[in-house]
Amino acid sequence: MKKIIASVMAATTVLTAAVSANAESVDEKSTESLSTNFTYVLENDPTYTVSIPSAVTITEDGADVTISAENVANLGDKKVSVTIAGTDYYRNQMVLKGKTESGPQASIRYKFELSDGSVIETTGGKDQVNGVELASFKDNGSVSFKAFPVLNGSSSIRKGVTYTGSITYGIQLVEDN
Amino acid sequence: MQSLFKNRSWIKISISVIAILLAVLCAVKIYDKAANKTENTGIIVKWDETIPDKSKTPEGIKIPGYPDIYFAANETSVNMTLCNPKDNKCKFKYSLYVDNDKQPIYKSDYIAPGYAIKSFDINKKLAKGEYSIKIKIEAFNLENGSKLNGAEVYSKLNVV
Image (cartoon, rainbow over all chains, first blue to last red; front, side, top):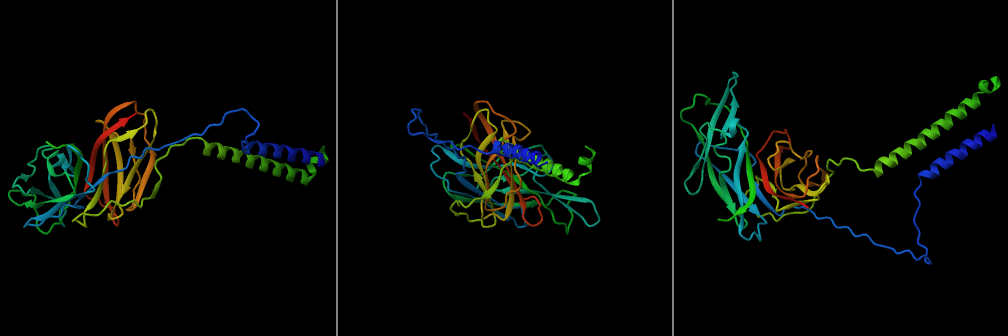
């Protein structure tokens, strides 16, 4: 019995030892050449920041919308361009949606008026304003414009409803023409 | 022989030996698994690096912008910082799209403000060349998870 137990214990010890790592040692008398491995990791880090509004908040008198850029430098012949990439509404229209207490859906269009007087809005078509530039930066700074509700003509506008929606902004370095 | 089987000590010893062997086998398997490469969906780490805050919109969402990006050819493991600046009051989710593909090559988990993913695995190997890359950043309210305005950062991907 003791021999059996001893044999089994010995076998277990051998199995465990097989998992152990063996450390390499260097024999000073050896003629083998040694080498050093170097590694370098190229980090893909962001180099600038654009601040966008967290939500589309509009009032009848027009709400200020500000887009800012930080840490913008050494762009050469390029600029940071901020565009509309899409919205959360069907066909990427500039529409906010809400729900009335009685249940029917309500919706309301909105528009942007830029500082140069140009108006950005959709009229039902698909991707009408995708790619439209809202701001551009060669350096740190801010660009502001106003957001207004479009209150005329739609039967889907309901009073007392909270309308919400979101925009996806496109950000990229482009040639400064 | 009969007396052997009737002897409970023999049974106990056998069970102990089997248990020890199983434990050793498990240890070997765990060691092997750790040594072998497994899919890295991105470990989220604290990100203390700050970009100087010159924004005039304290309520805005700070979106990181990227210059040209470099990945290694025929590799799924990539190093790229997907961060959520610590001043933000929302959580981020990143998706990466190459050229006009509708399916992303990578989707992250939620990233809280002040945290970043520094390396992760993409779901396909890319051959050498230049690609357009779309870095889609979705932002969500920290409290109720509702979707906020987001961004798509466009850049050039160099696979070398």
